[in-house]
Image 1 (cartoon, rainbow, N blue to C red):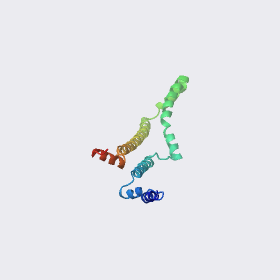
Image 2: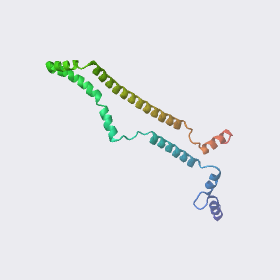
Image 3: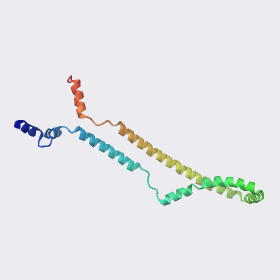
Image 4: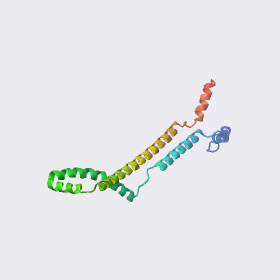
Length: 170
């Protein structure tokens, strides 16, 4: 029994797996290699998330965005309010409309241009923001598709087993 214990200690060391450590000099540990590949993939996804995450907006930016959302509802509800005023007090409403009839035509053109530029510029800015967001989403999707299409880490033991089976070994 002493010879056997001595042989086992020689082969496997004192509590360590010396054979495995010796083999790993020539062939990498497949399990450790898979763990490193998974960690690299997780790091790449974390980098994508950090790079393409939504930027934080300041309080001032949120305030201005809120103010920019007011003109359309104010114009819509103001128009509905004009109908209510006409129904509630037609004489008062007629006097106000006579005052509007006295506004010179160039001033109406100027007001139309200001409103057109305001809504046109807002439409363009929102369109560009939408296109930027769509492009970022498309980049994220393509990156995730590349990660999913990437070949899984090679399983050295499985490949050896398959090679042995193709050579006729059980």
